[in-house]
Image (tube, rainbow, N blue to C red; front, side, top):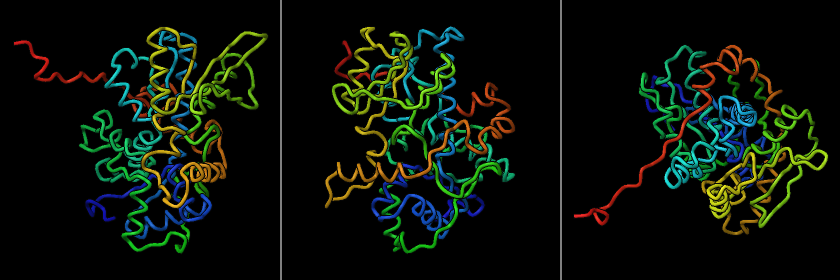
Length: 374
C-alpha cells in the first residue's frame, strides 16, 4: 500500500478484534499476529503501526466519568439516563435515522476507540512529529464495515487542515485480501515490535480490556461507578442472561436495594426491544452497552469467515484468542495519565472535551413525491 503522497507519513492503527480474527485464520497467537502484521505493513511502506487498545483506554475513562456525572445529576443531566454506549457506528446510524431527537440525549458522547485514535494520531502524534495533520495518512483496521461510515462523519473532519481524523478504514477481510494480493504468508514473516504513541506507553506486546470482545464498556463503567458512587469494590461482575445470551443484566445491590442496574443489548432485535421500553418509560437500566452485531464486535461483518468451519465454533476460537492477551485497566495503563496532563491539559479541560467527545444529529426522513399533496 503506497502512501497517497510522498510527503505524508503513513500510520496504521489495528483493532484487537481484527488481530484475534487474523490469529485464528493463521493459527498464531495474538502477540505474534500483531508483530507479524506490523512487519507486513512496514514492508509495504507504512511508517508507524499502533494498537487501538491504547486509544480505548481514553474511550473507557471518558465513558466512566460521563456516567458518574449523569448519575449524580451534574449539569442538570440526570434525566438523560439510561446512558447508552456509543462505540458502535451501526447502532449510532440506526439511532440518528430512526429515533432522532428522542434517543440521542441518552447516547454517550465519548468517542469510539477508532475516533480517539484519530485524535491521538492527527493531533498529539502530529505535534510530536512536527507535522500538520494533513501530512499524516491514517489507516485503521477494524472488524466492521460501519467503521467506514463513522470515519466519514463531518464531525471528524478538520476544516482548518482539510483532513479526516481517519483517512481510510480497512476491514479484517480486506487486510487478508491485501496479504493475498501481495503474496505474503503472515506466519512466514519476521516479527517487528509495535510502535508506541508516547514515551510513557509500552508497546512490547498488544493489550486488551476485561469484559468481553466489544471493549468491556459495561464492565468498566460498572466497576468504576460502584467504587466512585457507593464505595463498593466489585471483584467479579456477574451477568444474568435474559431472553437470549445477547441481552444480559448486571446489578449492584446492598441490603436488598438495587443501586446500579446495567445491561448489554447486542443485535438489532434486542436493540429494538430496548428502544421500545425506553419510549414507554419502562426501561429500568442506568447504563446499556449497545452493539449492532449479535455476539458483539468479534462477530463484526468485516471479520474473517471460514467456509469449512461452523461460524459458532470459529467465533468461540476468536473469543479465546482475544482473551489470551494481557488485560490492562485504563486507569493504570502506562502513558495515559501523562497524555491527560501534557496533551489534554487535564481530564475536564476544553481540549479533552473537544478531542475525546463528539455529538449526534437526528437525520430528517427524506420526503418522496408520493407524500406531496397537490
